[in-house]
Amino acid sequence: MPERYRVVANFGAAVAVLDEARKVHQAVPLTKLPQLVAGDQVECEQESGATSLRVVKLVDRDGVLSRIDHRGKPKPLAANVSHLAIVSASKPGIDPLLIDQFCIAAELAGIDAMVVINKSDLLDDEQHEQCLAMLEVYKAIGYPAVLVDTKSEGKLEPLITELAGKTVVLVGASGVGKSSIVQQLLPDLDVRVGAISAATGFGAHTTSVTFWYELGSGGSIIDSPGVRQFSVAHLSAQDVRRGYLELVDAAQMCKFSNCSHVVEPNCAVKAAVSAGSIAQWRYDNYRKLAEL
Image (cartoon, rainbow, N blue to C red):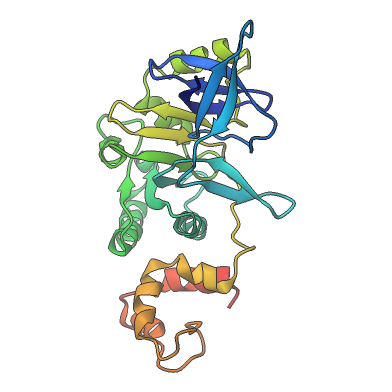
């Protein structure tokens, strides 16, 4: 009788899965199954004489985060995600355009987003105020947004509070401190990684593998490889608009239902930008991403 497991990492030829007793096993998927990713729930069987499990079924997914590969096809990164935690930092640089692209991707995937600015200890007073102002814009739209650092005691608490009970995938450019955040959230990380490595026979210390970890708060976190470039260039202008929630809200008052919010008369979005209720920089990012 197949039993249900959680995929915690995919190593290509095999996956690491977690059972209800929190023990890690190696499992080999049937060839007919789609590519499995961290967060997937699967059903496995133990074959007589086999040292590993056999994945026989993929349980229906919800909240799949994907990116477009070099062939223009969506490639899943993680599954059963409730929230996308978009991590930025002053080093290597806070890029609101990249944050917006992740917000769009989350919206189109049916996943909620939160914005995390890490390494707040490296900010001077002016930069600190600028970051707080940017986070207030995202909060006003409806995104949880926090300023944290992993070096100072208690400075990660705002993020810990937001993660409770959620399944969150960390995304962001390389160097923003995603792994440092995971290490703070999971003091026993080396033990968990060692268990995965021992169970699968694969070296688990790699930047090319996405891992799923259970948190003590009842939630879970997925640590994805650094994303240097995350593009929404394949999306239509209409899809980009769907990802800007404050534009969608204001557009209900536009004269034209298909308003691009650029040249049309009686545009409620442009009026909101002029009035300051929509941030100019968010509107500028929208036009850049929608190529308008």
